Length: 448
Image (cartoon, rainbow, N blue to C red; front, side, top):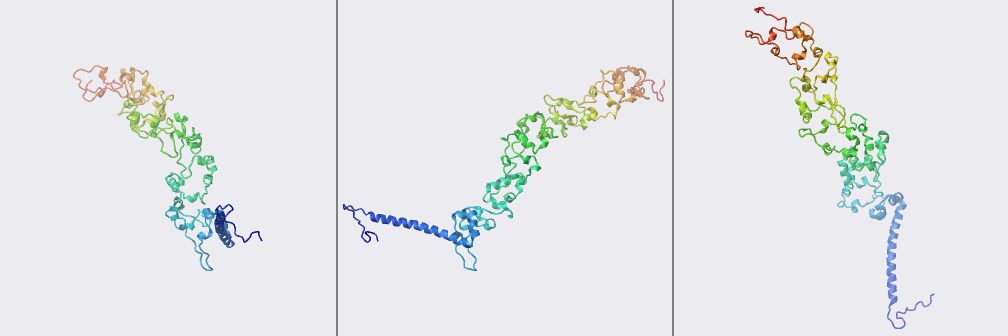
């Protein structure tokens, strides 16, 4: 058929050169043929196995091809299904540990792999019915589990499948935090501030426009929004200056403000100062008088401990609603707030402080008063009316001639020479009325 067929190929070229090229070509050709034929045969066998299986198990082979992950890419049917059983015999399936060594990964040591993972689609699994999902999830995601445990928020109480119903599924925040429930929830890009697994533990320091974000939840802190509203010098301070993290402990006031006098021992500045409005005119809670006295020693020293009800029953904050600061005067309660004009005619007199120093209301000097009798009579009507009214020569004497200070009762001898030596009575009032020294009261056995 072919010319020269049956003839032996010349192994020795003309010229006598010993170049055995024929054997070389034959050897190489056979090697290449065996190599390619073996790979082709193996690929063909694998393909044939897949095609054969799919004839009866079309759904399974399709699922592996579409959702099998590594199972569909690197594993063939016979890697897990070692032999096809005869009719009536249960199929033998390789254990997961044949590939997934429990010693390599804690997750592989969990029992009942197929309780979560479908063998043909191992990453397409449903978590919704799984109890204690966090235990299983944490074996692959230990860092996430550790972060969630540290969280001081509602997310820490949730199981993983409360949010992740399927593997790799990350729901939108609005599925729980409805925008209509809060203006804050309507803000875009929640994850820009809130790490999903620890949503209240994030840094504010780099947040721009923090006040608008903060006030969307904390409306009461807004200026003019109520007792907790920001005021004083804090109006111009950004929220992030004090609050670097959400729900973190508030910083010490002394980070910015110098401490008080050394004798101030209160560790909590908020005993006197509202954090957001440290000079608020809102009344404080009762504070210890000695705290104020640490700076205002001369004021406390002016209190008459024996007489003044101001010291016995009042705290500084009952009259001083707020501490002044540069440019703002002290806010002091009106006397009428406690001393109602309806209770006494004396309380209707104007300008209480012209007579009564607020810190020592009973320690004042009458000596320079003019027409003091009307003032005194508003509390002591018996001195001007009735049987004990001022009379005799005393009728023309002003009250402050004798009573230069409140409750001061001078000795009669300051103005009147004493009787003769035979008069031994030390108390002039035994005979003479204090305001009406005449007529003299005589007693039995005393002659006129």
